[in-house]
Structures are given as structure tokens and as C-alpha cells.
Amino acid sequence: MTRQISAGRERLRVTHAQVTLIQIDNYGPWTVTPEPRREVDLQTLQSRLYADLSQLFGNREGYVFFTRFDNMVAVTNGLDADAHALIQESVGNRYPVTVSLSVAADPSPAAALGVATDQLQDAGSAQDGNRTEILRGDPIAEEARTDDDVRIAHFDVNDATGKYTDQLNEFDSFINIEQGYAELMRYMRKAHDSLSFFVGGDNIIAVCDDVDETGYVDAIEHVHESVGVDLKVGVGTAQTAQAAGMAAKHALETCREEHTGVEFA
Image (cartoon, helix red, strand yellow):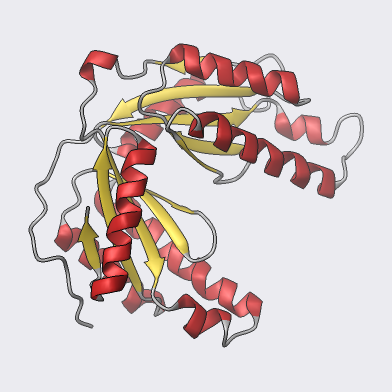
């Protein structure tokens, strides 16, 4: 399978992603105390909490990804400890549950999340009723921030509407999209220490380090060969997650216009 890539070679930059692990405190026991709660109520709480966190972090130029809902991952370059504490306080005031936050930064997004996870696990179990509203980690100091700290890759399925939505049973469309996401998620994690998240429709956002054009082409080829899903990707780099994400979206539009597989903003 032949893929076109953008004409110019992308200069690799040293990124420095700041990642925040968000974990609902004591959530498992809470869902069955004093007796099991209705699943519809739990789903409503989770979705509303995700929406509020998306806005709370988004108002500060961050991105939040829902992962398993009781655990979420945010890219938070530019948010200091006080901003994280205010978000925690806001959740505590609105919900019957609290959240713990752990912050870490590293050129490798996966390594940053690993450190953030270790910090929270060291504070106690996610099902420990005494471990509430933990805030750990050291955000990047303002003077250490650069314009190249965050790299976002926005993947999109080629002609998802024509191939899946308008042709297949909705559940079969969902299976195809999810297979593509799962394979890309595994490949980008293993090959490039990147974190990839499904964000709805046929879109996947990856937080990356110094992946070059060849790396993205290899990822696209791997997904096609493994599960038959065809992807394209726009890549953006900036000081914050939202700025990098918007740059990636514009690069993705260039892919659509010029029928290329990889474009850098």
C-alpha cells in the first residue's frame, strides 16, 4: 500500500509533555454502598464528570481523554499546582465523589504518565477510603516552558462515512473503527511511547514525542495491514495541548485537500 506524505521534512523537536492522571477516589466501593447503584446513574455521573473536567481543563488550554471514565488522562502544559487544586475543589463542590490528581512531565508522554501513575499508587489504593483528593507531582516551571512542548497527532479514518456509516450496520461500523483505534493505540505506544485516545466519530488523538514522517507512515501502514482500516494524520506542535491540537486539525484538513497521508502544521 503506497502512502503520500508531505513534501517538506519535519524537523524533530524535543517535546516535554505534561500529563495529569485523574482518578475518582474510592469509586468502586462507592458504587455499591450502601447497596449497588443503578448503572444508568453511574453512567450519567461519569459522562457529566468527564464533560465538566473537559471544560475545566479546556478553559486552561488542556485536553482531557476519558480512557476508563473512573480514570482519565489530561495533557496539562501550562497548568500549575494551584490550577489543579482549583479543579479538584470544583469537582468536590459539584459531585458526590472526589478526584485525585497526579502530574508529571517528560519528553516521552508514556513515561510521564508512568511517573504520574506511580505517584498516585504510592499515595494509596484507588479503593482506599482514606485516600482522597491527593495532588502530587511537579508541573513544568513557567521559565522552562517552550513553544515546542506538546506534539499532537490527529488521526482520521479515510472515508469512514462511505465505507462504514452509510454501508454497514452501526455496530459493525463501530467494530471496524474500534479495531483501527486499538491497533493504532498499541502500535504508537510500543513503537513511539505515544499515548493515543479515541475521541469520537472516527477520530483518534495521539500525544507524541519526536515521531517523524516515516514513523507516522509506518503506523498507518501497520493499521492497514493488521485490521484493514485506512488512516491519515495531521500533526501540530505548540506550547499547549489545545494550540497543538488545532494545528494538527488544520494539517489534517491539508491531508483531505491534497489527498496525502501525513501532514505537519
